[in-house]
Image (cartoon, rainbow, N blue to C red; front, side, top):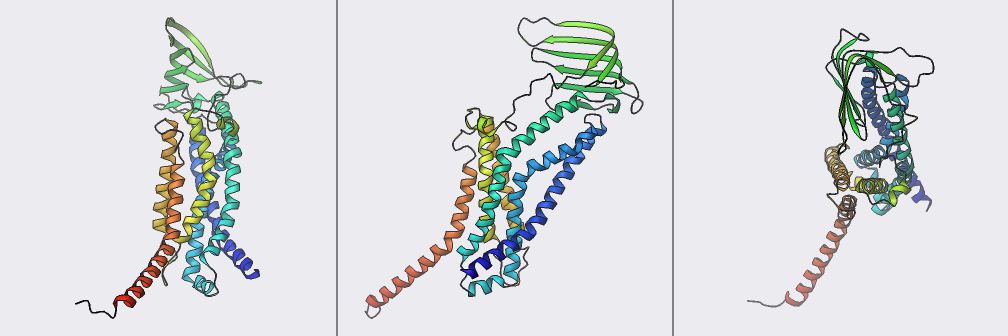
Length: 382
């Protein structure tokens, strides 16, 4: 019993070493990618610089539900590959350490990480998305036209606002030939102005204001029987929407898990199944990594990384595609996205059962040969 505990702790420690490093590297890469995107928006006046750090942290938090399982998957392959190449598993097998005991160590760590992933998916994910949406609305209210470049369409996250500047001499200079499209629930408003510039911030102002001169305003009704209108004005002040007065829009990714559980909308069903399936994927990927880590003597511990990367890429692609199919009602709520982890579970089961089936087949063949030799070996069949 003491030997089993020592081996269990040793295997978990060997997996945890590369796991922490791989996870830190992946989170850093993901955060760097998000930072580049947010910094680009900040330079173009679409995002206040004081919110960049918070938004990067929220994006990194959301990514953990995917990065933790793949980090576990890679770390098991690398650590066990090292144990195979160093003949440590050979010594363990000589001490009657069974593959089931090795799998038990992996399941112990995978189960603990699956609980963490479940908490992230069920609770941290919707909270982080809700905060991101609120920060996006706040950023929209403080959009700065002085930093926008000419020749680029600036589209709000929800698509409700589009700004295009045809010409400007440089940053913070007056823009010329400005096009603005605003989409409201019952109408579409289009503004065209010869010149536009950002009004200076005033005390107590909670949103940005843009002055449009020599402007033409077109209101187009979106409902039957609603009249259209055209207004010409020498000057119009365009105020960004006040986020404190707007009702937050419903989104499946930011909705509470209890709300998704009773919803019959395809996007909600897809999101709910995704949150429940991520901890299951954590355990299955940990189990799959064990047989994938087996290498021959004198073979590099990185020998299986190429095949492992292809397998994970295919699994993740199927997983995200299945979620999209459920969101678009192309696939019913059942099987939903469950067929993807079920397929992975079947692959893991086949890989683990196949050696035992081969052993049983060989034993049956030997028994048949013995029986055949006993009854027919001494007879003349000519």
